[in-house]
Image 1 (cartoon, rainbow, N blue to C red):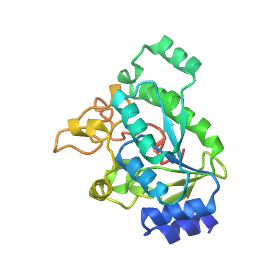
Image 2 (cartoon, rainbow, N blue to C red):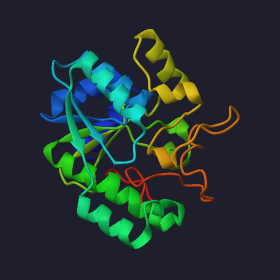
Image 3 (cartoon, rainbow, N blue to C red):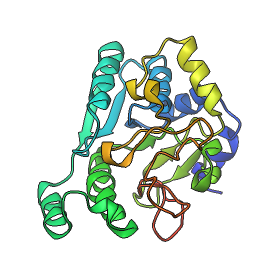
Image 4 (cartoon, one colour):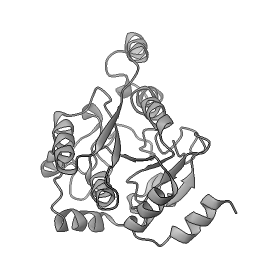
Length: 240
C-alpha cells in the first residue's frame, strides 16, 4: 500500500477535525475548496480552530447568485481566511457563447458539461497548482456518484496532490447540527428552499420530498448530476 492508502485506511472512521489535523501536519499547502454552502463553511470553521491561517479556494463562475458573494464576504470577515479565487478564461467563455449562446447548458448535457468545464473545472485546476492538498465537502449520504467518496485519496489529475473529504461519513443532519452549535452564518438561499446551491441558472429550490441535489440541473433526465469537479462524463469518480 502507498502512504496515502495507509492514511485512507487509518482515517476512515476519523472525525473531520482529525482528518484536517493530519492534512495540516502532513502538507505545507492545504486549500479548503468552498462554494460557501454549509459543508464547506463547516470545514472552514474546523480548520480555523486548528491552524492560525486558513487558505480558502473558491470559483467565481460568472453566473453565481449575488447571495453567494454576500455569504462569502460574511464568512471572510468572521474567519479572516486567505481567499484564492479561480476565474474562467474570458477567451474560452467567448468561444463557447459565440458558438452556442449565453445559456448553452440548457441545450444538451454535453454543452452543460462544456460550460462547467470552462467555468469550474479548469479554473480549479489552475488555482490548485499552488497547493499540495485540497478538501471538499462531499458526503456519501448525498448518494449517486458520491456514495464511494474516499476520505483521503491521491488526485489522479495532479501528481503529488491529495484530495480529502473530511465530511464523507457525516450525514446532512450532522452538518446542520454543527452549524447550529457553532452559530455559523449560512447561505441566504437555504431559507428559500434551496438545498444545493451552484450557478444561478442551474439551481432551483426543492420540494420537501425531493432529494437534496434535485435542484441542480433539474431539466436533465440523466441520473448523474455532477459538474465534473468530482465526476467525469465517462462515468468515473475523479479527484480534480
